[in-house]
Image (cartoon, rainbow, N blue to C red; front, side, top):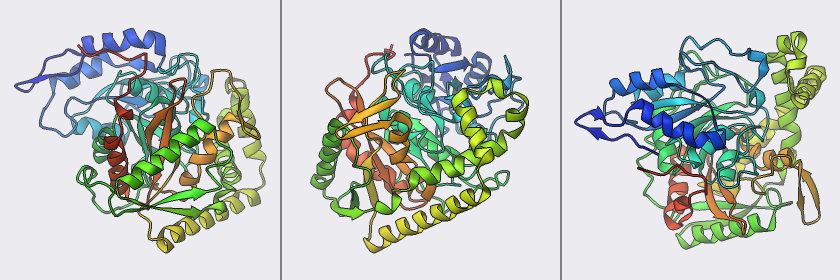
Amino acid sequence: MQHLRCVMGVVATSASSILESVARVDQVLGAMVVLDPVGLERQCEDFDQDLPLAGMRIAVKDIIEVEGLPNRCGSALYGDPPAPSRSDAVVVSRIRESGGLIIGKTAAHELACGVYTPGTRNPWDLSRSPGGSSGGSGAAVAAGLCDAALGSDTGGSIRIPASLCGIAGLKPTYGLVPKTGVEPLSWSLDHVGPLGKTVRDCARLLEAIAGFHSSDPTSVMSPSVGYLEKLDAGVAGLRIAVPSGFFMDPIDPQTQTLFLAAVEVMRELGAEMITVDVSYLSGSLEAEFAIVSPEAATYHHSHLRKNPELIDPQIRGMLIAGAALPSSYYLRALRWRQDMADRMRATFIDNRLDAFITPTVPAFAQLHDQEEFVYPGGKEPVISSFVRTTAPFNLTGQPALSVPCGLTADGLPVGLQIAGRPFAEDMVLRIGAAYERATDWVAQLPPLHATTE
């Protein structure tokens, strides 16, 4: 892969050569749905090497508006081809203002509602999925097509691909990053955040996109934080919780072994590791789907009424179920979510915690046609396995970061999830960076990776 090189403020590598390299690798990978040669050429002409994201190549999940490019959302509902977007989403505008270079848009599971991203391959094993719904973003970063990417996360859709593709991915605190110009799935659970090869890449991108914006009613005024400032502070003296029971059962044995090894690394780095009981999160899946289904059905009401045949049958079934769900179930799920958030807050306060670590997901990348995992003692559907360990932090709204914590015997990545107090992204990133420095997992590259020229 050709990287941008700045000489006296001039971009030495042309937009066409960057995108030629991307297209060549992506013929096999299928991570990108559209490239933006015109927009990238314009950005290269206006390149300013003094901006914070100067020269950083960034891909954008195809549910986020990019001026001049179609927004397909992985679905036939939006036409073929869809009309190009008239303006950038707020996060895209902020990236451009910070000097980031938008190379194009990445594949997503239809309507951002799934954990497969059909048509996209995992660069660690082409017979396997990169996860979803931000699978194109995860695969593109892991394969070196870009330096970082934007994804969205309603039940784990940033962290699942990050874990399965061996990269870093952050779901920020709910409301920290504005969602104006991002196609919703579930407005009360949707988050937008970065995926990067390293924790530092995620921190750089988060600094550009975070912050209140009046156009988004869910946007929150939060303390101004420099996410890069404490990346090198280490974890000595921090109190970090490890779950008992929930998050750990069922789990793939190799994933469990690698997670427990990561716990020991944290201990060796000087963190105080504390076991906590979070069995109150055991109803997370039920609450997650009781919220997502009716909110998604409400948003896609006209699509469901006018063109149901254009929606994937499984997603259509979820939308129909959501439309038929009694309002009492939805309201009960909202109360259940608040109870989980309150009890998680109490867990942090009572135990004086700085963070909470878990396996990101309890297994590794699934085969493209795989529908369930076989664990010691039983089976579980793939979607339930993945969302079971990620959705709790969508419900509580806390920041949660996935970083690589090892490879299975077959060379497939496993992720470590680090969750923190609301708006404590700096702490979560600090812990992730310390673990990253203490191990060599970030240096591992997948078999399918663009070469640096």
